Length: 261
Ligand SMILES: [Zn+2]
Image 1 (spheres, helix red, strand yellow):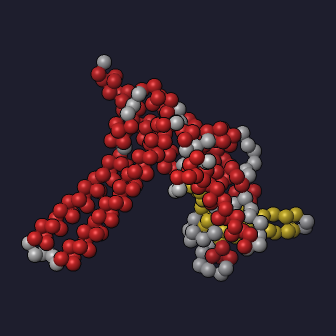
Image 2 (spheres, protein in one colour; image 1 turned 90 degrees about the vertical axis):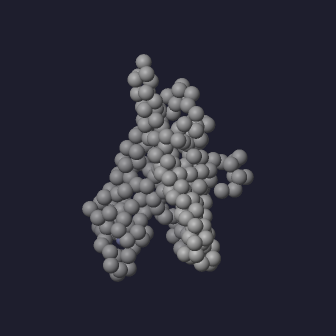
C-alpha cells in the first residue's frame, strides 16, 4: 500500500475504491453497465461468478441470478435466486452483522478507561501467539540444518535450498504478525474509526434498500449456495476478530481484578 494515499483516504477506503474501479472497468469493457452485485456475487460451490438473467413474462420483468458454470453447460447446479430474495437476504444479513459489530465495538470504550498497553494485548492474542510458535519451529529447523550439514547428512546444496525455504516461511509469518499487530494498533490509536466509518455503519441500520456504494463498502464477496442460502464475506473480518479478542482480554483482566480483591 503506497504511503501517499494515507493522507487523502484511509487504507480501507482506498481498498474499496480500488475494488470498485476494477469491477466497473470490467463492466465497461464488457459493454454492460455494472449492476449492484457486479463482481461480488459468486457461486458458493464452483466459485465462478453468477450470471444475471432478466425474464419477461406478460409485461412483468423479473431478475434472477444463476451459476455461470451451469449457464454455460458446465458441471454445476443452477443456484438460482431472484434479485428480490437476494436483496432481502443481503440487507438482513448485513444488518445483523453490523448490529453485532456496533455492539461489540463498545469494548473499545472500556479499553480506553483501563489504560491498557499494546504489548500486553499483543501477547494475549492467541492468533499472534500461534504465529510466533510457528516462527520458532522454523528457527529450530534452520538450526538443525546446520547440525546436519556439519555431520555430513546433507549436501551444501540441500542446506542452501532448505535454509531458503525456512527463511522465506519465517518472513511470511513475520508479515502476518505485523499485519495483525497493525490491526490491533488501529483499534487502539483512534478507536474503531481508524479502520471503519462508524457513522456509515449506523446508517446501514436505517436504510431500506441497498445501493452499490454501501454494498461495496461493507461486503467483499457474496457466496450463493443452493436453496437460496447466502454467505456474506465482510471487509472488516480481521478487525472484527481482533475486537472479539479485545473483549476477551477485558473480561479476563476484570476477572483477575476481582480475584485480587
Ligand atoms: Zn456453480
